[in-house]
Length: 379
Ligand SMILES: Nc1ncnc2c1ncn2[C@@H]1O[C@H](COP(=O)(O)OP(=O)(O)OP(=O)(O)O)[C@@H](O)[C@H]1O
Ligand SMILES: [Mg+2]
Image (tube, rainbow, N blue to C red; front, side, top):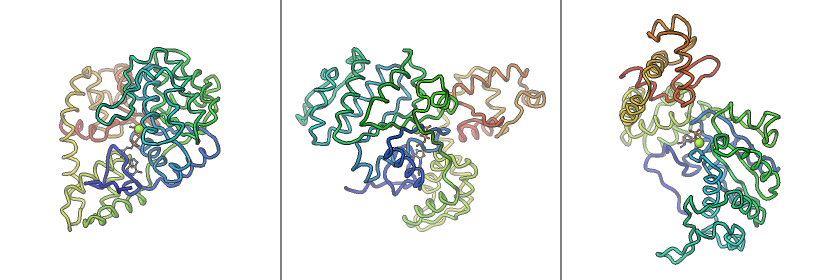
């Protein structure tokens, strides 16, 4: 296969190949082992650490590609069983389309309710699945058919359902129980459920009253260790006739607490700022930060303008602190003119719900580091 080439080796927002992906070898091996042993996995970690990337990395391994059919659906934007079935059906068809197997030929035969969407591509003359959400009339029937189809597969399947906690928000009740039953009966597929809402995910998988109780091995994901990430970044610079001082990488890593997305964004910009043959030094860090923040400023302003005044002030107070403790204390309330402890409490509850802030062990921070820096310095 032709090797995928990146203009900037610090790839953000998509998975390209091993070459641009830092480590995660133990995590990949762990996932592989669970799959080989017929266990489902619940992958839980804070946002932007690299859950989706890890799953894609696993799916990209030659042995995994050889041994399994792999399917990846992100259900973050879905709100009903109908939509879940829609994305699942589309993904299965998309993955199988380039393959010439007898199993693929049975797709519309088994999943008869999707036959409506079977069209011939006017350009290529080849069959495609042109499905609208409205084409799914009875989602439970289609779901049954999809699982029947998976069970007829010619090799084992791995189905990754990203942002799995979302099913808790579906309009219909009992979706968890329904899915659990289907998944349990499915011999040919293993599942990876990933999600960032730790509390919701933990409840789903570790609470005896819930359908998914003990139906998956829980797996957390930590930041990539600083030394490993530093080696990776230094290598990507030098592969492209540039240099970076290792200490610069470590500084960036620490500044963003190892949260992969933010670190990668910074390295991408630092790489762009470094001419060929030159060395990137710590002096570039403020410029890189500023450049990134400026590209996001419009959306920050938009976000802020939609926020009620009280939440806005609390958000800015937390940003100014960086890591804020005791936010309902008199000292904090007074320092930032926040009215009362109870109004801080109600504002912060809403900010937490909309994922603008996070809280661990009593420490609050604005979830998006760049937004936080912008709020603290420019607003
Ligand atoms: N091991 C890695 N090496 C290099 N880049 C990575 C690695 N893991 C993740 N990334 C990059 O970091 C970004 C965040 O990763 P990813 O989207 O996988 O996180 P996530 O945990 O799924 O986040 P979210 O909860 O927001 O969906 C991605 O844009 C990806 O390109
Ligand atoms: Mg993700």
